[in-house]
Image (cartoon, rainbow, N blue to C red; front, top):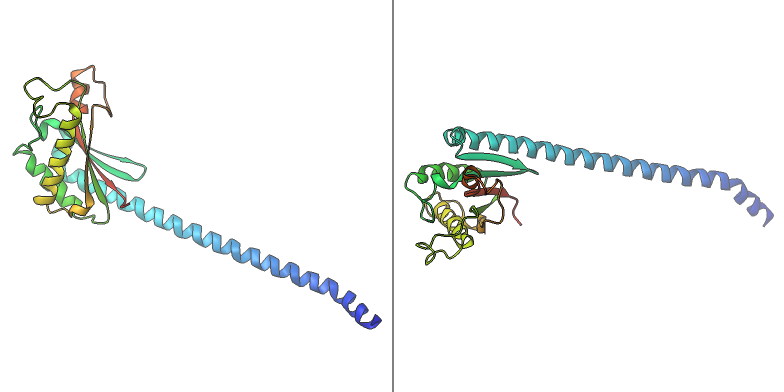
Length: 203
């Protein structure tokens, strides 16, 4: 019995050392796995940023004339690409029927959207703060209704004519409630009357 006790006591430092080595090895493996995961995530982020930059260059080249004239703008926020088109190149004042000359612009936008089928497309309609005129109130009682009708018209065109997959499309109207410029000036109101087409990750 004494011999066994003596042997056990003699082995304790060795066993403790083995336990320490096992834990140290476990920590090392976990650290390596964590670093590998971080590296993989960074590679994915870098690839997505490179792709975003390329897509922005493509749509900006496609809409170069509209961008130079101030009628279109491409922005990027938190990895989301957005195409902003002012009202005057798309619709008559107070109307939601797409102008004939706007179809060329929408064809180019649609062709671009079809090159990135893994992104959904949200079309947002926006207006200024000027109330709908009396002659048009029978059709669109509020700016909210007008903005929603315009967004839906764009979605319909992208589906029917540009052949964008309808499951990717959504349309929403914000009326006057999300201005990006001062509604107290004519220039600001012109900027606020717009359609925004956003590329978003599928839900």
